[in-house]
Image (cartoon, rainbow, N blue to C red; front, side, top):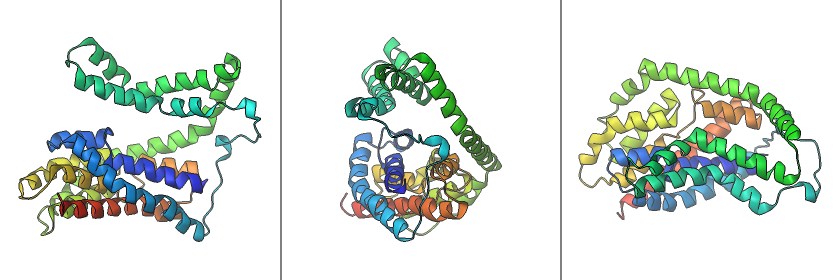
Length: 305
């Protein structure tokens, strides 16, 4: 599970940091008036070495430490499938890309057509996360269900069993999200960040540190980005500060040491059957390493840009 899961988590977190069209970097790029294409290019450059270190190399460290987990019983099927019972590679690949394709198509349509046109309105609706996932679910019901010879009764039974297996996970995630909102409404993150704005360091390091502190305080990386962006916007007026690199610096800080106040913390814990100490060491270590590698990449690029 960890051999596949940890590199996957690393790739997802890195795309969250460095690569538009993820909503976080896109929104901050707009606030900082950064070129979204350059953010993507710089993000690709930084993400390659980061992925190599935090993916397979990090897994080897975890494996060497003797950590191993089992897939939760409700998320696996104790059956060996015959080749003819499995969907083909291409249909599986394209089905998995459906939500991403819809969201990217929505962004392209919004950029290519007038904002008040009907096609933009339609794609804005289907391009939301919830609608994209719902459409992907319907597509998967066909490609993995009806196309494999299953009837509606079998599909509904499968859906019912899936809901039963993830019900507790959803409850835990919801609890983590509620706790996060309490922290946000209390203003802890903004108060701590305001104490650190005058630090005598590189603007990129200051931005990263403040964003990381807010992240640990309130949990949600997206909320962290928006909170930090408002506080750090004045840093762009300093000479030599590149807005595209500043976007990536904030995005890296926003994933530093995922705390229990983030719903994703509990999602990873439940899906990977980690104990709390394992979560702090493995998941916290992975997200912190990604954040640090990203900052190193930003500082390195700043010498050439």
